[in-house]
Amino acid sequence: MKTQTLGQFIIEKQADFPFAKGELSRLLRDIGIAAKIVNREVNKAGLVEILGETGTTNIQGERVKKLDVFANDQFIAALSAGGEVCAIASEENDEIIPIDSEVSKSARYVVAMDPLDGSSNIDVNVSVGTIFSIYRRTTLSGPGTVEDFMQRGTEQVAAGYIIYGSSCMLVYTTGKGVNGFTLDPSIGEFCLSHPNMQTPKMGHVYSVNEGNYLHFPEGVKKYIKYCQDEDKATNRPFSSRYIGSGVADIHRNLIVGGIYIYPTTTKSPKGKLRLLYECNPLAFIIEQAGGKATTGGKRIMEVDIKELHQRTPLFCGSSEMVDMAMDFMTKYTKEKV
Image (cartoon, rainbow, N blue to C red; front, top):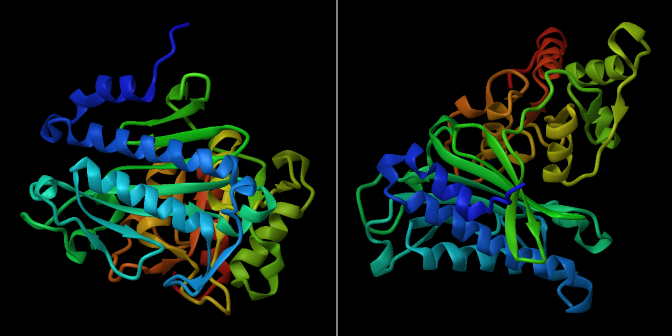
């Protein structure tokens, strides 16, 4: 069977976007190059003193890991050099990063990213990932502005994630299905391994941090109990699987079927995950694979974005499981989400 690389696949699909004139294809290839570099460092992190914390915190108030900074720098460098991006928004930066260079003056795109999702797992050798989202700019020319990012998820041109695990995979969508590519280290190329990915409508896995159970909305508590009840007709109880690295949990559930829940809590009444560069791109992928992604009350990609690091709850995965969870939220949770 012929092996198709990421580059070949992108070129083949370029005709789907005649307005892009090749810029989107080059942008996706730039992301693939940065992913290879980050994967290399993830694989040898314990050997090159890149583990541990920098001693600083990011805009979210979270301790910054050294590998977070490395990944952030690599993706910013790759995107800045490519010339297809006029601004970048990253979890690691308080403000956007406008690209003010001759080659980027006419750039049509902005990129929002979480350069290293699940970074609390770095030191214990658990899978981590990168999440990215691509929008067409709304301003006319020059360096990008924050207004370019204030778009609903429905306006995304492309989105994807890279998972750095037992193998390195890049999964992305341009709104015409979801395709997964696995890095072949022998040739240094991402190769198509999961074409036209579709998630099952019903799964038997629920992924939620049950350590926060007491702080969950009543609808989530009731849904978890439903998952744990024994019922042969629906093959319950379901299995509880929670890695604590969002990309890893969602990647597993995308393939085998399941639901991932990161709800509001009494400590985080607006939710904890970020809408722009975590939930919107993941929602785009999940929907394109036949699943659903909601806040527990409405579709994630229809939520208005009002600030760069805006937070939201997330329920995503197999459509029938998300529908059931939303039913529980409607019935038992009074607060609108």
